[in-house]
Image (cartoon, rainbow, N blue to C red; front, side, top):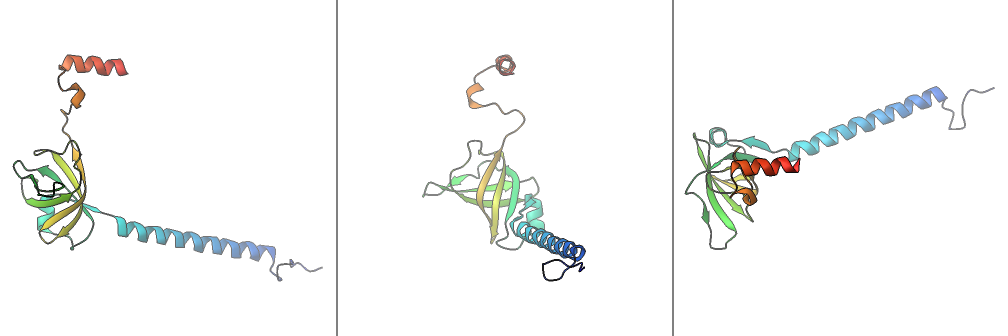
Length: 156
């Protein structure tokens, strides 16, 4: 009696080994493809001092975080493009953004801008406004601290 199967003469033991090797190669290929895709989409985080000291290559996707300097916010005539300066106390970086700004975006607040360097200007594609630890929603702005605690306790 012959110990081969009807699949072209490969023993079941060798057939399992071939399937295992194919699955392993496919898994490694998928991992390498995912790593390549992530490396192209990763954006590094910089503060102004780091950006000035060691600037990234032009056009590379990065994130810039810092404080919007007071008096630096200017709206262009088109009404949707703004220029402002992000600083960290050590360095300053001019930023240009076209679009609708987040509600919390004001001078003196924290911001994380996603975009790229074009010359000496950071061109932002997206703005993420940050609030401080004393943030109170607009609806609660006129309430006393005691009233806010009462509202929070009622919602629990």
